[in-house]
Image (tube, rainbow over all chains, first blue to last red; front, side, top):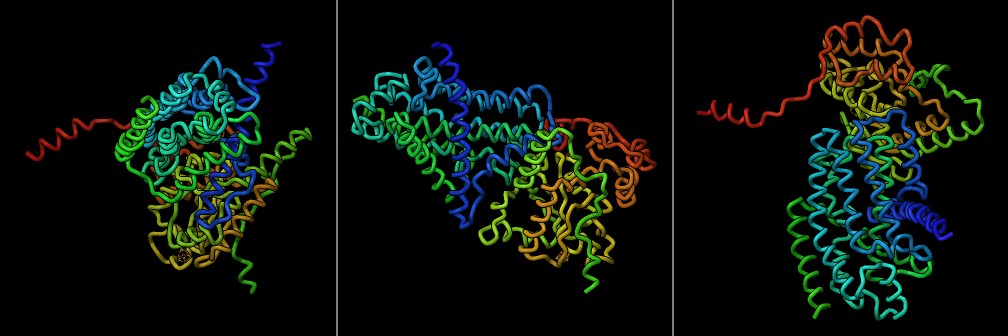
Length: 299
Length: 248
Ligand code: SF4
């Protein structure tokens, strides 16, 4: 019985994540549109896009690795979703923990690198090298944040972190306990989501959307699906570490949408940084803030 | 007023190319859903020719906002659904257009914006422009005008959406079915050893779109001149040595 329950949870968590992710993509595009004084896409636009991409007649595959790469990119996120506790569904959260999650989140980027490698398009290779550089840039502050949070709560188990914050009220939320680390996380959030001003690897004008250059049809559809997961994951991690997670969806959903909306609204106001500037910026301010934050919580 | 009627809007669509209804009603519903999504989500290639391109930014930005119709720009042909030809096409540009068009995944649509794509417009006497676009590529919709206002562009795009939804926008199949004709016109303009990296005949076979007009004298010419594609040699080091040698 227990096994069946787990199975249902494991199926349900990625599906929920996908649906919420679709709404987040819509929100992102609407925010962008409103900032540019446009109406923005209709409500079901993300779904139209994905169905359209999967229904293309021509599906250009560049070989086995290309296909496996996309599966890894989407699969990595699906695996990550089962490690993220949400209200009512814990999945594998108490067995995995924050460190496993941090590893899981690297798989999609590596999958993309493998897949793009086989496309043999120079723009793609430049894009993927930029994507990995960006990952290097934000991962160090990210690890600092995860380390700090684990230190404060005394556990790497995400489900336990949530219950600690839930039992002791707002004053025990991560954002009150370690405001500097929360700020660090907020600063690297756009980079984790691959959005402006850190979207160095998509760069449509110079490298024709980088890793996506040879992706068409269902491969691009896979990446669209991945984007939904990406936004959702970033929102849920931040909420779990700093905003007390949630026992009920009704309090949980506004939090994750708010978390995604903040960097989005800021993002559309800034142009893109150069690759080396991203690295310099990430390793200077978020890292400095993160280290000071760590020192404060460990005093 | 009658003259206006002569401006083509759509390339004639033969009955055989209309949507084929499948016998299974569920499959029909599925087809309709897919067509609906295809019409509501169109990625257009960011590739512009001629002066009509200047009308696209207003059509995309705050005043007319194409994104509310699900149309957004994409930068690589692999992801694009519509190719907008926004004005006169010089011979040199046409080569790039054909290269780009052949790389786009089907179903793909071509929109000819501006009078210059219909009949050459004011470049009629130019030696360097290709006059009638539909001789080289199957065009789905023409938006005539010198240049058409954003309202006209949007209304043309809406026409295309209607065609896709009803299943009659299958002009991309023409390219495979009548490849010999299109290739012939291209060869006339570019020279008889003109070739592109995309193997259209193999693709036509893949889609089952080979007709007796797919192969002909022009494709025979193509096969005679065709050179196999080879990966470019990567020899930065040698080249640098060579340049250095020349400089000394
Ligand atoms: S129709 Fe007029 S505006 Fe358009 S490309 Fe020709 S000359 Fe330019």
